[in-house]
Length: 369
Image: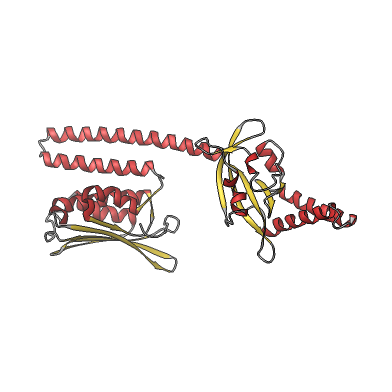
């Protein structure tokens, strides 16, 4: 619980509490020593009362020996000195689905009995006055100077406002998504009517409709997830897999991109996949495509490289006149990502690469997808 109190302090509180219990039981009949230990314990308790979150301490058997004043303010009942890890059920709380939280699910039990190094849970806690609020419980072990576990401590954090804001954000994002979808529908209608009156060929009208749909779907995916970022792997599977099916090999580490970069990359994937389906490797049954990305690190600087490689299809021919699709996979993507785009029209098939710097705060590398 480094954010709340040092391990040394919590370990000392547990040690002093045990020592005081021994003195009071007469195993160490020394009134002055008992007074000294009691005074020292009160000093530590006063220090804990300054902490802006609830703090509960338990000994190695799981008995709760102390809770600061913030605990009682939050739960509106006295600190329950539960006897062991099987008694935490008297702290009444519920999961999001309404199930009551059982004793073994609390972080104190999971740290003390199960030996976890850190444990947390969000619960809908029932206060002493019958009202409920959302609380996060975070637990860690307490160790002595030799590294032996002497107990555990948990922080109780009021997250009611956090949950309220999250729900409010969810409602607002849903409304925004609804409005954006309506806007796309209006745009499609205006474009379709204008093109029809201009005697534009049906195939071109369909292509524009498909691109508007792809942009709308990419935006909807982004909004329905975390809004401010998206995973490259998710973009690839959502966009390329429905078009290429099992003829696409999609591989790479987990990487988060900011929303603007993610949206641009999503549109680039759509253009690459549809072009492969119409003119490239996916236009014949034997054709395949590899969509593979990797991270190159040079100290603190990391770069993302995305490769699109078409195989076993017809030779790639560079178009004489580049249109909207070429703009999306080249200049537009380069502008949004700050990266460099290279395209190769070879006899073995079309190859495309994006190389861009990763922002430290937005990347998230976790393994293979």
